[in-house]
Length: 192
Image 1: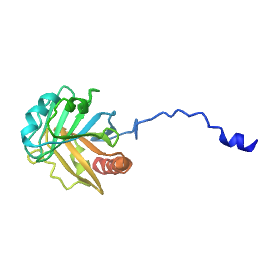
Image 2: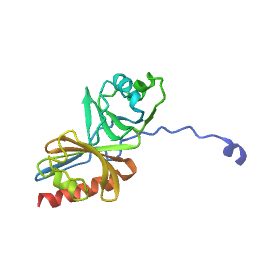
Image 3: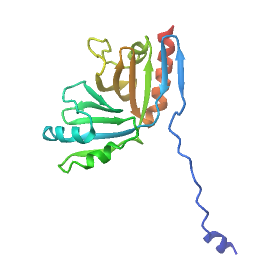
Image 4: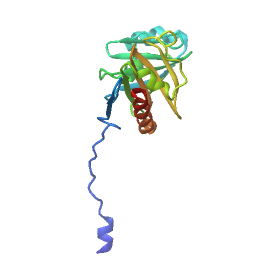
């Protein structure tokens, strides 16, 4: 009897996958912090010779200068290194599938599950991020459209300036609670 019960396989349970920090938001004087909806993302590595073909396939021109980005129809490409880009699609399309159309040697890896994005907006947005980021966020040094891989406190982030008083912060989901908490505390200080 015990053996028969032990050999029974339990029916699989269904699980609901919820985005990390879903619905988190903080608004204080001068700054609003919000977790952005999930997006499709790829880490793209390719030689210069393939930039035109990959840009055409992705529908956005891959930037080729440090600290730059390009956006088109809900898709953003951020320059991270001489042959490296982070491509984010907020429109629900699959940039990985688009890259598959390019048969020449390149590396496109889906990292949608790995990253979480947050927006930091308002007149105190730069001061909030500067509390833990060594990047010079003045408009002269980091204009609208500027992007860079940097740190915030103890976590690596990718930072994109989306407007004069707005930023997109990308981090690994394992650091997302730390980054959100850090920014929340910094926002409180910046508002004071």
